[in-house]
Image (cartoon, rainbow, N blue to C red; front, side, top):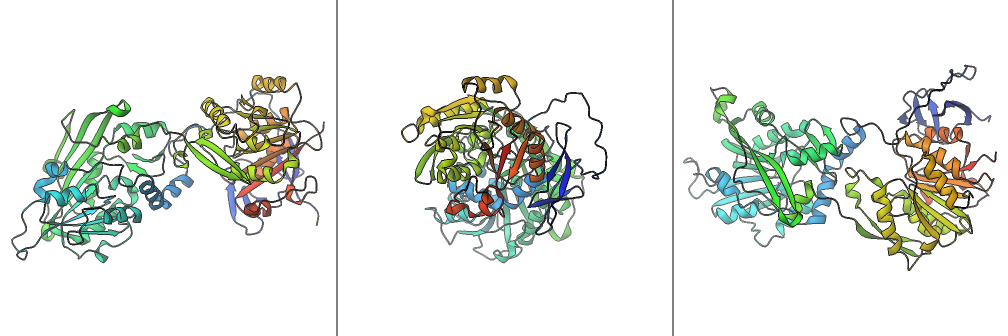
Length: 589
């Protein structure tokens, strides 16, 4: 079968003729999997012209390429859907990490809502009836247990969509089956009346719960609550308000999902309510606002030396009896006010401050690669969505390529090795130190480079870290490239490595430009890039490589070198999974 070719235009305005990928082919402006026909990614403005078409007139103007993409107003649709899909998982992980140590018990609620929770039983209720409370989003019981301690004549239903949180409630020393019914329920989709008798609840509490729900699903929550709430019953809300310090910080970290809706570093989400948005939400579901108040307070956390301007919103709503309608306009009937610098009870626990404002702390992770144990001091993966220095995290492709290198020491033996974008951990550089002559571990982020020095010291007893030179290298920056060349004795590198370095499209040309400047122009030299398939299409990566003088080859089908495949990386060798290993040879010119 004749080989097919694609005519592509690289970032350098050069027109190249390259073989089409064995895995991906271009169809119109889409990348399509040749086996399944599934569309993988939109190539946008990149087009494949007719073979007999003339290349466009090249421009002599120099364009400055920005490594990181321009800031967008919101996160990508992919991340937005991922946060929604993994909402339950992220909260389950939250409770796995923090158990019941994160929030303090809310003993202030009896002062705020005592008249509702401890109110009189309806005269039509049977003698001896208990007032029934439903806590939606109960967490580990920070609301439940203070309430049953304060009010001996209430019964509390407590639900959460995290099974781990509900189990922690049931394991609590004060949990009594006769006074508390704890159960798992996703109130956005699962019917509360399957666990609670319809129209049997006097008061529903939503304490920092609605904010964790997508705005599109908040009405589902209220409709579900109405099924079990008695006519004339109350819904009590306490949640985050627009203008809170946490909202400002999340805005600065580019974590906006939609208007007033943000993702935190661990993937959990928070919505910030205005008075109008909260009242309108309940009004649309036929509930009447009794009062709504925004509380403003400057909170000091002395142990962390933090001074935080916090804003909460608190509202009380009731379900009219027999379709009774409030005769006054909602804006007149509701007590809408803002209290500034008031004496308000708040949660000053370590966990509460850490959730919104504290700088993430690097922790040491043990990583097994072959027979080696590596120590990697880095940030936990939960911070991937908000931390700006991505090199402070350990990404998935690094252990994979490190395992390939460990299984194939001949790739490294007596060679000069360069790792691009090594981040704080430089796993591949550490493994390479066992066989290579010299290694340069490079990154352009100062914070990552500082932590990298600590990781070299942590691993100094197990690896030949004196062979590893940790140096700053910004891709495309001529002075950095020349400094690396000079320190390497004006010699170039026989092997260049990179893991998870192709996820930002504008940075890919600079990556290959830098690699081309530093790789030895020999037939045996090699550039190895390992990554999980993300936003940049593989066809684009291959096209950009070609414009910078690199030829792609399938290393798993090659006899030079002939690689051993680690047992746990069979999918990598097959080319069928999301983990990819792309290998390139440089032009010998």
